[in-house]
Length: 612
Image (cartoon, rainbow, N blue to C red; front, side, top):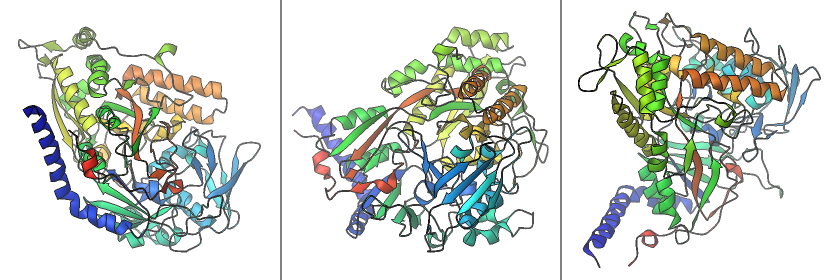
């Protein structure tokens, strides 16, 4: 055997040995517990930030497993279907919508789920101006941004009264992964009606991740059995979940789900190859090099690789455009950097300087395409470049011309300087452990060095990243993604200037320390107008025109610089049955309650090691 080949095989075997030594005890314990019933083992890269739906701004989250909405979106088609509500009626004038709940719904503690819970969720939580629920943004209607009225007709019927016809209304009620879930009034009402010393409802500090899982009452297929920070979440089937199969058997089929918390996508790959994970790529598409590696092991590893086509999510960088000051009068962004970031020519130059073809070839192994629109490619409102959407080809010459036209200049060593002679340098951050984003960030640093910009690339913990975006606003440039969807209005919390996820220029938010001098640019206000117009418009052709203008504005002013549209790739053990997969849903296991585990065991480690 050649010495180099021997060393390579020895290294791979050693790597797996170390991995199993670190995680073997927990894996053995979990497999022992699995003997008590069917068990699915998944993974995620970060600890949950909250168990409180109204405060959640992350994906993935526990709400995928634990909660449901009035309606749901069928993952393969995007069609709206009944969920907690068995039916709905819309009045002829489009101003009244009546939902009828299923008979006999119960919470996971056995308490009846009724119209009171629905009214409480919408009126007292989501529509409460003292609670920073980002779902509120998706239901503000018209010029005056009115919220619907909601009232109980009887124990099973709830009526919503809209101030005017509102096209996105039904889709906003469609539950996880992006829309509104129903919360238990009997558990949370007291926290909404009680206040702290600053006048904030106690609700905003309720159901944090330090809450005993036994106190989290849910209506989805699974409840939280255990949470061990930095290790795992364990979900157990909810015995009161409403759904049944055609034979009358109550769902979900799988008894327990283990959600392992792993430090990186590389660790996820090791765990999958060693048989300690059942799925990889369910939250974000598989890294293309993983796909190539796993393809060779598909048969003997007893798993299947799925290619779902274009993924609905987007990946982008954004600069901090916020020109406000803190309560103490300190600028949120260094004024020197703020002048750069708020220059449209600067952002356009950055877009031209990023070598997206190289990203696709080197990082994605050719398995992806450029992304220019902020709207998911599967959406009927997506505007491709062939129909006139402005794009930014890779061109260092164009980038430099734009910078020089905006008053920047070059020093003797080729460093980019602003008009006052300040070196152009900023920090780019993304979530640590996501190897694709780390690779993208490294390439962006290299690309921008070619136009004289020094980028300090610093991956950080995901929850820290989200806190910077949503709380402190202390950041320069961030590489992140958005889950996407069929109707662009589902992203109104990102695009409306006062939205709770309007990250690139975050306005004052309920419960946060005040900021001074916040303002929105004219193009941001125009996007506000377009989103309101699209929400009022029921003619689909006209809605396409409205969202077409929105996409043109985002590509002209570049509040986000879109990078690459990934291909939805996922690897799944053969023992997991019932999967329905394409790139439309942001979660590959969107029909989790229908999935089943066969008795086929996971492959042993030795079957996955290289053979002679």
